[in-house]
Image 1 (cartoon, rainbow, N blue to C red):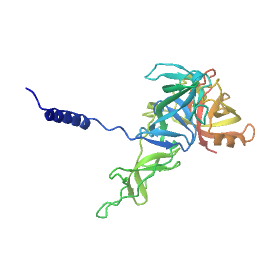
Image 2: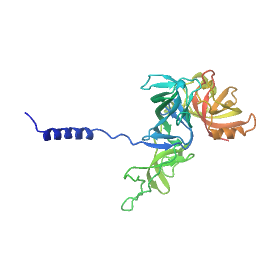
Image 3: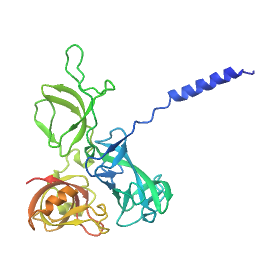
Image 4: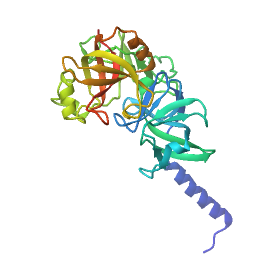
Length: 332
């Protein structure tokens, strides 16, 4: 049986309509600048790929685990990379000291990439390679997004925070040092170490009911050891066990250094504290610092003893059994 052209057109239109109806729209993406220096990880709590400068804009998607899937693009010298067809990527960083990602060939630095970091190759020109990489960045690294005012529930009910799109919870930043309670006016169950985005669900008598999406290490569940009881000796005995956990250590300041190819656990050129401890242990520890924190530590008296809070970045460096930490803040 033969069909007229209009029948075929209608059939094709119906088919394309069905296809469109069953295809989910792509997640919304937007470029957002970093408000502080930050690491790009391969997954929440995973391996560091890049250390990104403050002010660098990343393309981010919906929140995931207290952070955002984020994409960075830039240019890298061709001689800093080699072919590396793994996990769907094209190239990886070949230099032991890592390399610098720039906004254009020979342009402004955006980030430092560590040895082995994998990238998609976009194009190659004049000895430079245009690359991009998607990873995970903590929400606290971004300034709070613009938000809509509170919407009042009709009939005089409790005001709820609603986005301008209608019905979605308002996203706000919970400040560092904020106490979290199980109910309004209740006892503190946790205190935030750094700012974190949260969905504001309800306001009641000066309190905000918030919903925070976060990750914890498996070891933190159940009868995990107290983080502050972790010793450097325990870390040296099991370097992978304590990564990501928080410690409160008293250390003796020996000096401020800059990371080099001998310490690939840190981005090349990043300042770090060389310290002895945790006291009374006599071993050494490296503590990664921001540029601002490094300037503050340089003003300390030689061999000063300080108490710090930090997270364990690596259980040891490549060549020495020296723990590597990420500095959070001083406790004294």
